[in-house]
Amino acid sequence: MDQQRRGEEKRAREKRAPSIADFLIQFRWIVVIPVILPLSFLFYQLVRWLPAIWTLLHGLPSEESHRAAVERVRRRVKQRDPQRDGLVCTARRPWLGVALRNAEHKRGARYEVDLGELRNVVWIDRRRLLIKCEPMVTMSQLSAATLPFGVAPEVLPELDDLTIGGVINGYGIEGSSHIYGLFAETCSAFELVLADGRVVRATADNEFSDLYKAVPWSHGSIGLLVGVEIRLIPVKEFMKVTYSPVVGSLAKIAEVYEDLFCPRDLDQDNPEKVPDFVEGIVYSGSTAVITTGRYATREEAARKGNVINDFGWWWKPWFHIHAQSALERGTFVEYVPVRSYYHRHTRSLYWEGGLIVPMGNHPLFRLLLGWLMPPKVSLLKLTQTDGIRKYYIQRHACQDMLVPNHKLAACLEFCHENFETYPLWLCPHRLFKTEMGTMLDCEPGFSSNKQPGDTDYAQMWTDVGIWGVPGPVLRCEVWDGVQATKNMEKWLRDSRSYQCLYAEVEQSEGEFWQMFDPSLYNAVRNKYGAESAFMSVYYKISNCKKGSKHGKKD
Image 1 (cartoon, rainbow, N blue to C red):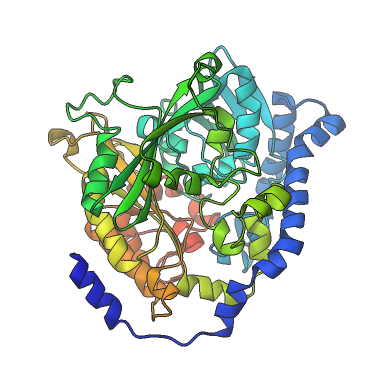
Image 2 (spheres, rainbow, N blue to C red):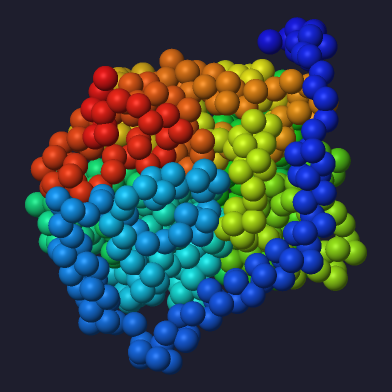
């Protein structure tokens, strides 16, 4: 769409009158700064020290202590009476989750199983490059446990609060996903408690391989995840980060982004041609900064002339603001301690922190109170009213679109027309070919018509993250968030692409199973008795409660 047409559409939109909800959202920081931030800090400290407290009380975590905790879960599941008790769900309170949608499925009759004990790193095997964790382990714990040994997970989602169970049952991605895939694909084994109380270990090549393939994106609707074995890779102490500005059309932004990690000669597995990390931040319809990272040694970072920038400190500018400076400075390179790079978006919650604490990136605020950031999402959810939640659904965008790389330019144009929300986040990921009826799979026939980034065994996709206040809302124009989400879902279905399920889902059950393939999911739920014990994924994540409960196509 050209600039003239965009301008005409903007002028054609009807103006809306400000509301009380606008006022409450705009000045929410008055409560957040003196109340939510200190409570968040205390909460983070509690979570940080819980493993140490657990160790003092129970000794070092071990396979034996893990088995004892799993046995308590197994007994609880086994005690359920299918005729009397409700469907199984975890006892975790809905507000404790990072996902912005409410866990409506926990409001009715349910049979709660407490997984709260399962929050430990069980063991690290440096020889086999594996780590075993329980599902409540966070990304912050994971990086803290591995980096001292010079290893890290192949994919480590940025936000500290995300749990291993959440990013496997749901969705987990990071700037290294263009090499290793989504987080769940970096796991070598899932340990599950099934509906009948059995404890099984599912891998890609054992008798439970169907479970192994079906668990990702299932949102706990197949069994209770109680243990995970995750592959590790050797890493260096620093990340050499290159910031590359792009000025031009959205199509040009998509082209430059792709060229930085997808060789035109299709030599995608050549580490000399493909960086270790890739991320794009689109700041407007005509500007973006693409960052690429390569692991570097401490000695390389310390060489004369190299710039070291540890932006993990609380007084430093937020990462997305720092990266934006490349639009004025031009391309630049710096070396960042690897853990600070891994968690670069935590303090500002990407750019959503600026909506909650508008002065949060001011130098004086960062210096005096930056150590309290970020506000804990769960506390924000706990303290918001239904009115504020509805306001966010109607006038705030929070969605992720997963699209094949060759459709990225069209996706960016659609995002501008439908949301006009900036910044946008771009994160590439390999989608590995399964041909097993998994909920997600590559486009049919992609390997016979490879695009840059594709190989025989995987297709290159990109996550387009849409988080923030849409342009029409900023201009006090009428904008319907529910309709925009429905428009997005239709675009994704028509483009054979996917919606991330942590956000608001407005499509009907029939439309949902047009987007996702239910074949393996339904077969596994039936085979292992999950249909009568666990609510289907659609019912757990959707606002539209219609049709069959068990994930069948309409």
